[in-house]
Length: 421
Ligand SMILES: *Cc1c(COP(=O)(O)O)cnc(C)c1O
Image 1 (cartoon, rainbow, N blue to C red):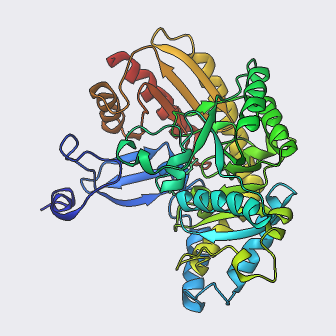
Image 2: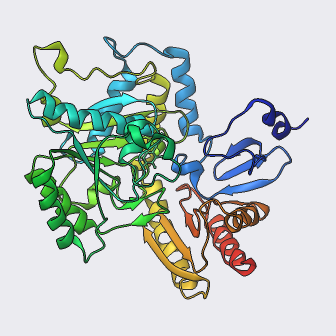
Image 3: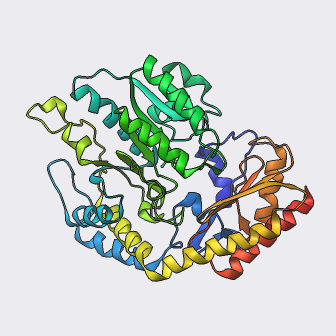
Protein backbone atom coordinates (compact mmCIF):
# COMPACT_ATOMS: atom_id res chain seq x y z
CA UNK A 1 0.00 0.00 0.00
CA UNK A 2 1.15 3.51 -0.74
CA UNK A 3 1.54 6.14 1.96
CA UNK A 4 -1.46 8.05 0.70
CA UNK A 5 -3.59 4.90 1.00
CA UNK A 6 -2.33 4.10 4.50
CA UNK A 7 -2.88 7.75 5.46
CA UNK A 8 -6.64 7.36 5.01
CA UNK A 9 -6.92 4.83 7.81
CA UNK A 10 -6.02 6.95 10.84
CA UNK A 11 -5.14 10.49 9.82
CA UNK A 12 -7.30 13.60 10.11
CA UNK A 13 -5.82 16.57 8.22
CA UNK A 14 -6.06 20.28 9.03
CA UNK A 15 -8.59 22.48 7.20
CA UNK A 16 -9.97 19.47 5.34
CA UNK A 17 -13.45 18.11 4.68
CA UNK A 18 -12.37 14.52 4.12
CA UNK A 19 -15.59 13.48 2.39
CA UNK A 20 -15.09 16.10 -0.34
CA UNK A 21 -11.29 15.89 -0.46
CA UNK A 22 -10.28 12.31 0.33
CA UNK A 23 -6.88 12.41 -1.36
CA UNK A 24 -3.53 13.56 -0.09
CA UNK A 25 -0.12 13.66 -1.72
CA UNK A 26 2.65 11.88 0.17
CA UNK A 27 5.85 13.89 0.18
CA UNK A 28 8.96 11.83 0.85
CA UNK A 29 11.69 14.46 0.60
CA UNK A 30 12.37 18.15 0.16
CA UNK A 31 15.48 20.00 -0.95
CA UNK A 32 15.85 23.72 -1.59
CA UNK A 33 12.64 24.64 -3.44
CA UNK A 34 11.69 21.14 -4.54
CA UNK A 35 9.23 18.71 -2.96
CA UNK A 36 9.30 15.07 -4.13
CA UNK A 37 6.32 12.74 -3.71
CA UNK A 38 6.22 8.98 -3.28
CA UNK A 39 5.65 8.45 -7.02
CA UNK A 40 8.79 10.46 -7.82
CA UNK A 41 6.97 13.58 -9.02
CA UNK A 42 8.60 16.87 -8.11
CA UNK A 43 6.96 20.19 -7.28
CA UNK A 44 8.38 23.70 -6.90
CA UNK A 45 7.30 24.86 -3.44
CA UNK A 46 6.09 28.28 -4.57
CA UNK A 47 4.45 29.10 -1.22
CA UNK A 48 7.42 27.99 0.91
CA UNK A 49 5.23 25.45 2.74
CA UNK A 50 3.03 28.19 4.20
CA UNK A 51 5.78 30.81 4.23
CA UNK A 52 8.09 28.91 6.58
CA UNK A 53 11.14 27.50 4.78
CA UNK A 54 12.31 30.80 3.26
CA UNK A 55 15.96 29.68 3.05
CA UNK A 56 15.06 26.46 1.24
CA UNK A 57 14.16 23.00 2.51
CA UNK A 58 16.76 20.99 4.44
CA UNK A 59 19.27 23.83 4.26
CA UNK A 60 22.52 22.37 5.66
CA UNK A 61 23.47 25.72 7.24
CA UNK A 62 20.46 25.23 9.52
CA UNK A 63 20.25 21.44 9.82
CA UNK A 64 23.91 21.10 10.85
CA UNK A 65 23.48 23.58 13.69
CA UNK A 66 20.35 21.85 14.90
CA UNK A 67 22.03 18.44 14.65
CA UNK A 68 24.98 19.70 16.73
CA UNK A 69 22.59 21.17 19.31
CA UNK A 70 20.88 17.78 19.58
CA UNK A 71 24.09 16.25 20.89
CA UNK A 72 24.48 18.98 23.52
CA UNK A 73 21.08 19.86 25.01
CA UNK A 74 17.75 18.65 23.62
CA UNK A 75 15.08 20.04 25.93
CA UNK A 76 14.80 21.54 29.38
CA UNK A 77 12.07 23.32 31.34
CA UNK A 78 12.21 27.06 30.55
CA UNK A 79 10.53 28.09 33.79
CA UNK A 80 13.44 28.66 36.19
CA UNK A 81 16.07 27.47 33.69
CA UNK A 82 17.72 29.13 30.75
CA UNK A 83 20.21 28.04 28.06
CA UNK A 84 22.60 29.38 25.47
CA UNK A 85 20.41 28.93 22.36
CA UNK A 86 17.61 31.00 23.94
CA UNK A 87 19.99 33.69 25.19
CA UNK A 88 21.77 33.95 21.85
CA UNK A 89 18.46 34.03 20.00
CA UNK A 90 17.17 36.83 22.23
CA UNK A 91 20.25 38.91 21.43
CA UNK A 92 20.06 38.25 17.69
CA UNK A 93 16.32 38.86 17.45
CA UNK A 94 16.21 42.03 19.57
CA UNK A 95 18.97 43.31 17.31
CA UNK A 96 16.73 43.11 14.21
CA UNK A 97 13.29 43.84 15.74
CA UNK A 98 11.95 47.43 15.80
CA UNK A 99 13.88 49.42 18.41
CA UNK A 100 11.08 49.51 21.00
CA UNK A 101 10.89 45.72 21.33
CA UNK A 102 12.82 44.54 24.36
CA UNK A 103 11.41 41.30 25.84
CA UNK A 104 10.62 37.92 24.29
CA UNK A 105 8.05 35.35 25.44
CA UNK A 106 8.22 31.90 23.85
CA UNK A 107 5.49 29.53 22.70
CA UNK A 108 5.18 27.01 19.90
CA UNK A 109 2.88 28.18 17.10
CA UNK A 110 1.46 31.31 15.53
CA UNK A 111 -1.97 31.02 17.13
CA UNK A 112 -0.53 30.82 20.64
CA UNK A 113 1.78 33.76 19.96
CA UNK A 114 -1.37 35.79 19.22
CA UNK A 115 -3.16 34.29 22.23
CA UNK A 116 -0.27 35.51 24.39
CA UNK A 117 -0.33 38.93 22.73
CA UNK A 118 -4.03 39.22 23.59
CA UNK A 119 -3.42 38.11 27.19
CA UNK A 120 -0.57 40.61 27.53
CA UNK A 121 -2.80 43.43 26.26
CA UNK A 122 -5.72 42.51 28.55
CA UNK A 123 -3.60 41.91 31.64
CA UNK A 124 -1.55 45.06 31.00
CA UNK A 125 -4.66 47.14 31.77
CA UNK A 126 -5.88 44.77 34.49
CA UNK A 127 -2.55 45.04 36.35
CA UNK A 128 -2.77 48.81 36.18
CA UNK A 129 -6.26 48.71 37.71
CA UNK A 130 -8.06 49.74 34.53
CA UNK A 131 -10.98 47.71 33.28
CA UNK A 132 -10.67 47.30 29.55
CA UNK A 133 -12.22 44.22 27.99
CA UNK A 134 -12.82 44.96 24.31
CA UNK A 135 -10.42 44.25 21.45
CA UNK A 136 -10.09 45.95 18.12
CA UNK A 137 -9.24 44.16 14.87
CA UNK A 138 -9.42 44.51 11.11
CA UNK A 139 -12.18 43.01 9.02
CA UNK A 140 -10.91 39.91 7.18
CA UNK A 141 -7.92 39.37 9.46
CA UNK A 142 -6.65 35.90 10.28
CA UNK A 143 -4.78 35.24 13.50
CA UNK A 144 -5.04 31.51 14.10
CA UNK A 145 -7.38 28.79 15.30
CA UNK A 146 -7.31 28.96 19.12
CA UNK A 147 -10.19 30.82 20.79
CA UNK A 148 -8.63 34.23 21.29
CA UNK A 149 -7.06 34.10 17.84
CA UNK A 150 -10.34 32.98 16.26
CA UNK A 151 -12.14 35.82 18.04
CA UNK A 152 -9.94 38.54 16.58
CA UNK A 153 -9.95 36.89 13.14
CA UNK A 154 -12.57 38.60 11.00
CA UNK A 155 -12.20 35.91 8.43
CA UNK A 156 -14.17 33.26 10.28
CA UNK A 157 -15.07 31.13 7.28
CA UNK A 158 -16.08 28.09 9.28
CA UNK A 159 -16.03 29.33 12.88
CA UNK A 160 -19.83 29.10 13.27
CA UNK A 161 -19.93 26.46 16.05
CA UNK A 162 -17.69 28.56 18.29
CA UNK A 163 -18.88 32.12 17.80
CA UNK A 164 -20.91 32.18 21.02
CA UNK A 165 -17.68 31.78 22.96
CA UNK A 166 -15.66 34.53 21.31
CA UNK A 167 -14.13 37.58 22.97
CA UNK A 168 -15.81 40.93 22.35
CA UNK A 169 -14.16 42.41 19.25
CA UNK A 170 -14.92 45.61 17.31
CA UNK A 171 -13.85 45.78 13.67
CA UNK A 172 -12.50 48.45 11.41
CA UNK A 173 -11.76 48.29 7.66
CA UNK A 174 -8.18 48.20 6.41
CA UNK A 175 -6.77 51.55 5.22
CA UNK A 176 -6.78 51.79 1.42
CA UNK A 177 -5.14 55.18 1.02
CA UNK A 178 -8.46 57.02 0.88
CA UNK A 179 -10.50 55.92 3.87
CA UNK A 180 -8.26 56.66 6.83
CA UNK A 181 -10.18 59.81 7.82
CA UNK A 182 -13.33 57.69 7.96
CA UNK A 183 -11.52 55.01 9.98
CA UNK A 184 -10.23 57.57 12.47
CA UNK A 185 -13.77 58.95 12.85
CA UNK A 186 -15.04 55.46 13.47
CA UNK A 187 -12.29 54.92 16.05
CA UNK A 188 -13.23 58.16 17.85
CA UNK A 189 -16.76 56.82 18.24
CA UNK A 190 -15.60 53.36 19.27
CA UNK A 191 -13.37 54.61 22.09
CA UNK A 192 -16.19 56.76 23.47
CA UNK A 193 -18.49 53.75 23.78
CA UNK A 194 -16.03 50.94 24.56
CA UNK A 195 -13.11 50.22 26.87
CA UNK A 196 -10.68 49.03 24.22
CA UNK A 197 -7.68 47.13 25.56
CA UNK A 198 -5.79 46.25 22.41
CA UNK A 199 -5.68 46.31 18.63
CA UNK A 200 -4.62 43.06 16.95
CA UNK A 201 -3.70 43.37 13.27
CA UNK A 202 -1.69 41.88 10.43
CA UNK A 203 0.53 44.74 9.22
CA UNK A 204 0.43 45.51 5.46
CA UNK A 205 -0.57 42.06 4.20
CA UNK A 206 -3.47 39.89 5.38
CA UNK A 207 -2.33 36.41 4.42
CA UNK A 208 -5.37 34.19 4.77
CA UNK A 209 -7.62 36.94 3.39
CA UNK A 210 -5.90 36.06 0.10
CA UNK A 211 -2.90 38.37 0.47
CA UNK A 212 -5.05 41.47 0.83
CA UNK A 213 -2.69 44.46 1.07
CA UNK A 214 -3.24 47.81 2.75
CA UNK A 215 -1.74 51.26 3.03
CA UNK A 216 1.29 51.71 5.34
CA UNK A 217 0.64 55.38 6.12
CA UNK A 218 -3.03 54.69 6.87
CA UNK A 219 -1.95 51.93 9.23
CA UNK A 220 0.51 54.31 10.84
CA UNK A 221 -2.34 56.77 11.57
CA UNK A 222 -4.38 54.00 13.19
CA UNK A 223 -1.40 52.98 15.33
CA UNK A 224 -0.86 56.60 16.37
CA UNK A 225 -4.51 56.86 17.37
CA UNK A 226 -4.15 53.69 19.46
CA UNK A 227 -1.02 55.02 21.19
CA UNK A 228 -2.82 58.27 22.02
CA UNK A 229 -5.68 56.30 23.56
CA UNK A 230 -3.51 53.83 25.41
CA UNK A 231 -4.71 50.91 23.29
CA UNK A 232 -2.01 48.22 23.21
CA UNK A 233 -1.09 47.46 19.61
CA UNK A 234 -0.36 43.82 18.74
CA UNK A 235 1.24 43.28 15.32
CA UNK A 236 0.67 39.73 14.10
CA UNK A 237 3.79 39.28 11.96
CA UNK A 238 3.49 35.49 11.88
CA UNK A 239 3.22 35.65 8.09
CA UNK A 240 4.90 38.98 7.25
CA UNK A 241 7.99 38.63 9.47
CA UNK A 242 11.55 37.87 8.39
CA UNK A 243 11.95 39.68 5.10
CA UNK A 244 8.74 39.01 3.20
CA UNK A 245 7.75 42.66 2.82
CA UNK A 246 11.24 43.63 1.63
CA UNK A 247 12.25 44.77 5.13
CA UNK A 248 12.90 42.46 8.07
CA UNK A 249 9.42 43.15 9.46
CA UNK A 250 6.26 44.75 8.06
CA UNK A 251 6.34 47.01 11.14
CA UNK A 252 9.56 48.50 9.76
CA UNK A 253 7.36 50.25 7.16
CA UNK A 254 5.55 52.37 9.80
CA UNK A 255 7.02 55.06 12.05
CA UNK A 256 4.75 54.12 14.93
CA UNK A 257 5.91 50.79 16.32
CA UNK A 258 3.64 48.14 17.83
CA UNK A 259 3.76 47.47 21.58
CA UNK A 260 3.67 43.72 20.98
CA UNK A 261 4.72 41.53 18.03
CA UNK A 262 3.79 37.92 17.21
CA UNK A 263 6.34 35.82 15.33
CA UNK A 264 6.33 32.24 14.05
CA UNK A 265 6.36 30.50 10.64
CA UNK A 266 9.69 31.68 9.09
CA UNK A 267 11.07 32.30 12.59
CA UNK A 268 12.50 28.77 12.62
CA UNK A 269 13.08 28.63 8.85
CA UNK A 270 10.51 25.85 8.46
CA UNK A 271 12.42 23.35 10.56
CA UNK A 272 10.71 23.17 13.95
CA UNK A 273 7.58 24.62 15.49
CA UNK A 274 8.20 27.69 17.64
CA UNK A 275 6.73 31.14 18.21
CA UNK A 276 7.69 34.29 20.04
CA UNK A 277 5.61 37.15 21.34
CA UNK A 278 7.87 40.17 21.80
CA UNK A 279 6.97 43.34 23.67
CA UNK A 280 8.21 46.75 24.73
CA UNK A 281 9.75 47.43 28.12
CA UNK A 282 6.59 49.35 29.08
CA UNK A 283 4.40 46.28 28.56
CA UNK A 284 6.83 44.11 30.52
CA UNK A 285 6.99 46.65 33.36
CA UNK A 286 3.21 46.37 33.89
CA UNK A 287 3.77 42.73 34.92
CA UNK A 288 6.91 43.34 37.02
CA UNK A 289 5.74 43.45 40.60
CA UNK A 290 6.12 42.15 44.16
CA UNK A 291 2.78 40.45 43.61
CA UNK A 292 2.91 36.93 42.13
CA UNK A 293 -0.46 37.40 40.48
CA UNK A 294 0.72 40.28 38.35
CA UNK A 295 3.07 37.96 36.43
CA UNK A 296 2.07 36.42 33.09
CA UNK A 297 0.94 32.95 34.12
CA UNK A 298 1.17 31.36 30.75
CA UNK A 299 3.56 28.61 29.70
CA UNK A 300 4.04 25.83 27.20
CA UNK A 301 5.99 22.66 27.84
CA UNK A 302 8.22 23.18 24.82
CA UNK A 303 8.80 26.91 25.42
CA UNK A 304 12.16 27.96 23.97
CA UNK A 305 13.10 24.42 22.93
CA UNK A 306 16.89 24.57 22.35
CA UNK A 307 16.71 22.91 18.92
CA UNK A 308 14.07 25.33 17.70
CA UNK A 309 16.13 28.25 19.06
CA UNK A 310 19.17 27.00 17.10
CA UNK A 311 17.09 26.77 13.92
CA UNK A 312 15.86 30.33 14.48
CA UNK A 313 19.37 31.62 15.09
CA UNK A 314 20.66 30.07 11.87
CA UNK A 315 17.65 31.49 10.01
CA UNK A 316 18.30 35.02 11.31
CA UNK A 317 21.96 34.75 10.28
CA UNK A 318 20.88 33.75 6.77
CA UNK A 319 18.28 36.52 6.61
CA UNK A 320 20.99 39.09 7.35
CA UNK A 321 23.44 37.64 4.83
CA UNK A 322 24.22 39.55 1.63
CA UNK A 323 23.23 36.52 -0.43
CA UNK A 324 19.69 36.36 0.94
CA UNK A 325 19.23 40.13 0.86
CA UNK A 326 20.30 40.01 -2.79
CA UNK A 327 17.84 37.16 -3.47
CA UNK A 328 15.02 39.19 -1.92
CA UNK A 329 15.81 42.15 -4.21
CA UNK A 330 15.89 39.86 -7.24
CA UNK A 331 12.54 38.26 -6.44
CA UNK A 332 10.97 41.69 -5.95
CA UNK A 333 12.25 42.85 -9.36
CA UNK A 334 11.26 39.59 -11.01
CA UNK A 335 7.68 39.81 -9.66
CA UNK A 336 7.49 43.40 -10.94
CA UNK A 337 8.45 42.24 -14.42
CA UNK A 338 5.91 39.41 -14.24
CA UNK A 339 3.30 41.92 -13.16
CA UNK A 340 3.69 44.02 -16.32
CA UNK A 341 3.32 40.87 -18.36
CA UNK A 342 0.21 39.48 -16.59
CA UNK A 343 -1.79 42.47 -15.35
CA UNK A 344 -3.51 43.15 -18.69
CA UNK A 345 -4.50 39.52 -19.24
CA UNK A 346 -8.28 39.40 -19.86
CA UNK A 347 -8.76 36.83 -17.10
CA UNK A 348 -6.88 38.89 -14.52
CA UNK A 349 -8.92 41.41 -12.55
CA UNK A 350 -6.11 42.94 -10.49
CA UNK A 351 -2.59 42.32 -9.24
CA UNK A 352 -0.70 43.47 -6.15
CA UNK A 353 2.73 43.08 -4.58
CA UNK A 354 4.40 43.80 -1.28
CA UNK A 355 8.04 42.70 -1.14
CA UNK A 356 8.34 39.10 -2.29
CA UNK A 357 4.57 38.53 -1.98
CA UNK A 358 2.77 38.68 -5.31
CA UNK A 359 -0.96 38.09 -5.78
CA UNK A 360 -3.43 38.25 -8.63
CA UNK A 361 -7.22 38.14 -8.54
CA UNK A 362 -8.96 36.31 -11.34
CA UNK A 363 -11.84 37.83 -13.24
CA UNK A 364 -13.88 34.74 -12.50
CA UNK A 365 -16.16 34.15 -9.53
CA UNK A 366 -14.81 31.32 -7.42
CA UNK A 367 -15.68 29.77 -4.08
CA UNK A 368 -12.92 29.56 -1.53
CA UNK A 369 -12.98 25.76 -1.59
CA UNK A 370 -15.00 25.25 -4.78
CA UNK A 371 -14.51 23.04 -7.85
CA UNK A 372 -12.84 25.66 -10.00
CA UNK A 373 -10.33 26.38 -7.27
CA UNK A 374 -9.64 22.63 -7.04
CA UNK A 375 -9.14 22.39 -10.80
CA UNK A 376 -6.66 25.23 -10.64
CA UNK A 377 -4.77 23.59 -7.80
CA UNK A 378 -4.67 20.29 -9.69
CA UNK A 379 -3.41 22.01 -12.82
CA UNK A 380 -0.53 23.55 -10.89
CA UNK A 381 0.39 20.25 -9.24
CA UNK A 382 0.14 18.33 -12.52
CA UNK A 383 2.63 20.83 -13.92
CA UNK A 384 5.04 20.49 -11.02
CA UNK A 385 4.24 23.70 -9.16
CA UNK A 386 2.86 23.81 -5.64
CA UNK A 387 0.61 26.86 -5.47
CA UNK A 388 -2.43 27.04 -3.24
CA UNK A 389 -5.03 29.39 -4.74
CA UNK A 390 -7.28 31.07 -2.17
CA UNK A 391 -10.63 31.19 -3.96
CA UNK A 392 -10.01 33.32 -7.05
CA UNK A 393 -6.63 34.58 -5.86
CA UNK A 394 -3.35 33.08 -6.95
CA UNK A 395 -0.37 34.17 -4.90
CA UNK A 396 3.35 33.46 -4.93
CA UNK A 397 5.46 33.50 -1.76
CA UNK A 398 8.44 31.36 -2.69
CA UNK A 399 11.58 30.64 -0.67
CA UNK A 400 14.19 33.40 -1.06
CA UNK A 401 16.54 30.86 -2.63
CA UNK A 402 14.27 30.09 -5.59
CA UNK A 403 16.26 30.25 -8.84
CA UNK A 404 15.38 32.48 -11.80
CA UNK A 405 14.51 29.37 -13.84
CA UNK A 406 12.22 28.00 -11.15
CA UNK A 407 10.51 31.36 -10.77
CA UNK A 408 10.01 31.57 -14.54
CA UNK A 409 8.42 28.11 -14.47
CA UNK A 410 6.02 29.29 -11.76
CA UNK A 411 5.04 32.36 -13.83
CA UNK A 412 4.66 30.31 -17.01
CA UNK A 413 2.49 27.73 -15.25
CA UNK A 414 0.22 30.48 -13.93
CA UNK A 415 -0.11 31.88 -17.47
CA UNK A 416 -0.88 28.41 -18.82
CA UNK A 417 -3.45 27.85 -16.06
CA UNK A 418 -5.36 30.95 -17.14
CA UNK A 419 -5.93 29.27 -20.50
CA UNK A 420 -7.83 26.32 -19.00
CA UNK A 421 -10.30 28.53 -17.10
C1 LIG B 1 -0.42 31.16 10.08
C2 LIG B 1 -0.83 32.36 10.82
C3 LIG B 1 -1.23 32.30 12.17
C4 LIG B 1 -1.37 30.99 12.89
O1 LIG B 1 -0.18 30.32 13.04
P1 LIG B 1 -0.18 28.75 13.33
O2 LIG B 1 1.24 28.42 13.57
O3 LIG B 1 -0.74 28.10 12.10
O4 LIG B 1 -1.04 28.53 14.53
C5 LIG B 1 -1.52 33.47 12.81
N1 LIG B 1 -1.42 34.65 12.18
C6 LIG B 1 -1.04 34.76 10.90
C7 LIG B 1 -0.93 36.11 10.28
C8 LIG B 1 -0.73 33.62 10.17
O5 LIG B 1 -0.37 33.73 8.88
